[in-house]
Length: 436
Image 1 (cartoon, rainbow, N blue to C red):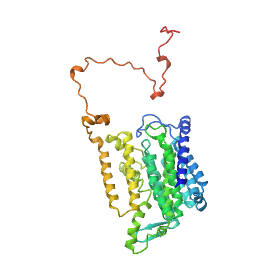
Image 2 (cartoon, rainbow, N blue to C red):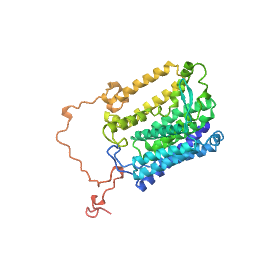
Image 3 (cartoon, rainbow, N blue to C red):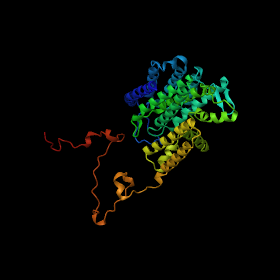
Image 4 (spheres, rainbow, N blue to C red):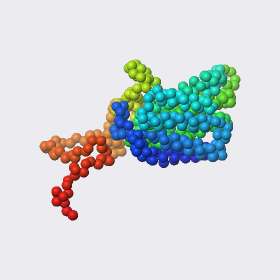
């Protein structure tokens, strides 16, 4: 665990320290696209944050290769090299898209090619556990098609949810944390070395997201862009493929005894084995709803719109930060609820806790529908929006309109604290008889 934490910290530190220079590089190269109709930010923001995240990935793999307890992952398995190859390709396509806005079909082809590169180097699904049947071996074509489909779905699910500041990085970090705990339990608890690569990938993915989040929280100073969203989506898919298709379920000794007993014993294992489909259930649901919505309206499935879940939260009345936190809440509830159920499937307390937290989540969703007012004695400790409005007597209201504040026009294209207008709008010191 100590080596994994060291790898995580190094990855986070490299990503965090490089994000600042990458932001300056993005501004210098003009990687600041104009604000589109579906965007929620008000000022052009640089992209290319995926550059820092990719170098964080490289740093994490490099450090892990030199640690004694993690070096065996690189010696016994070719999966880290397969991941790096696929990640480099999808990252390069993402960088070009952040700068030149590539066509959606080109990006889809690049995603499939990246998945094929990983399959050629051994990172593929070899078998699937079937309840009541056991382990079912897949042919080469079946494993390849299933691997490519999982990679493409996961990448696009993460890419679709990348619509608010800090949303994609935070949700993937939550998913990676739950996945790390599950993979580490299989590797350390069952002493199955085949789960070590997936555990390493999850730790590095957490470090990449944690290092980038301080720069990406609202108001974001830089966006990860497609170079970052497709990259972390591919790493999350690679982790799931590694532990699903490489770890033999028979090694867990869950298929012993009668068929009914074996199926019941294996049930907690089957749910996390469909990761990342469960731990990113919200982005995956958003992806499916977006495809259905756009197809129903006669649009392309890849056409952008403002119908995503995070857009609907803003339309309901949630603030930007609250919408992000609500998405975090539901992601953590699904991810860690699934993880807890995989450990203790017979515990009723887990089910009751999930039900209770789901009710809390529904209340949070409905907060903009009503604005509760706190009692007088509690107004000092609650936000201003929950305080009672003070009634001002008519006698105290000043008569007549207030003098209009003189405003100085600001040139078009300049905004915020960086506004530097034309010097001609300032008073001419020589004509005004300035001293000195």
